[in-house]
Image (cartoon, rainbow, N blue to C red; front, side, top):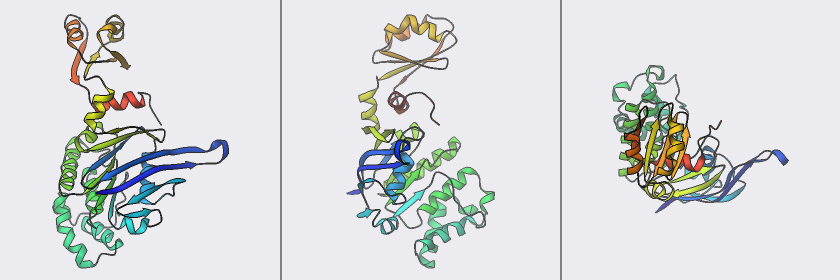
Length: 306
């Protein structure tokens, strides 16, 4: 069952020559029980796409169907079945952990009894039972993100929008949130995820789209996209002489890219390359399979975006 359908979505800002197209003809769909990822550099249009899907921003053109409702016309009704984990925490510092969940549930029109029935499960789900009466200022960054996730689930939503849910967290906190998100998927919930962590996308996403300059430039499963766009093996070569070595050994790889002092060698047949490196002094190297980060960098470039 399709829970979200987006067709030919456009959104621009400004006037005349200063008009800037942020979302440029985006189309995708999300099935119930799946995680769909939106990947892209800063300013690619990911957050604007989420806002359009939620009816918080009105599109210039295109159609959105969210949990059976047309958006933005019926956005308010649709959002009753949606949970949102924003990029920045918006927890109320004057309330305890429990009170933050309770008040949010009341915003959805839930009765006191209905919210109370959810709170124990939500605190257990987010591993915050021991912090039930703690104020927000007493929580770590990971605890705040877990509370934001728990709050987004108070209305038992069918679909959860997650805008970079683990940014700024340490590895332990990230892994705990990943476990919780996988549990939600196992329960039949759907996730729409934006993230800058490629390992997060590989772990969670059934399908994903790479967005750049407001357009989808690639879409599919993580494994299929890697196989289609990237050579199967990568050898990272480190050291002051990496660029000099690469100039002499370029014939041993299909292509070589540089970032700082590192040469990234992409190939489907790494044996000759590895034999060469084994007899070359002054260089360190790492041989690994290609991953989603390699795909992302090939499609969007290695230059910094502000």
